[in-house]
Length: 251
Image (cartoon, rainbow, N blue to C red):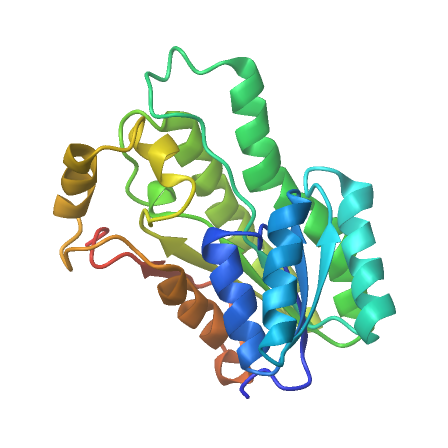
């Protein structure tokens, strides 16, 4: 029960890493706002958490829109009366391809979801944390922002921006007792994997895995365990850190 008494928003929690984080946080005592743009997936995750004895509510919101991020804060306060932790996990990528063929629409979508969502969470939620004496952001970036792969240039760039923004946020918000940390997962067996690879084949999976020294893709549980530590009071003196959860990929 390392998060007992805490309230957390987890964006993009309808599948993949976000689902793993939401489920682990609830198991550790947190009350969780499960956010996703896909209502069926989000409702399923929240219902599963409640069926397991945890506390969770699904709230649909598109994190690229400021008023909807503000709505997540409002929903958290209405449901649980407080907010302590925000996990900015929602993310998208363009398909693996030449940097010269990515459409402007895909470019804008990648930066809106992966970077602008952090801007909106800072604009709307940091003031609440300041007023209430502190809080915690954990932003899920990627090893792509540290050791970029060809074919994902603009996705790499968005995750690099997320990392830099998080570090700057950590310094600026530190006087208000607001911590900001980053997790950089390596590719995992999530709905985004085929997009990262261009297509999902055994050969491409083997190629990706061969670049990871520990010999496997990441799991939602790997990222959830890291997020749990960074969001817990055990990490009260850690801010501005980037934790690679990558099986050695970035060494």
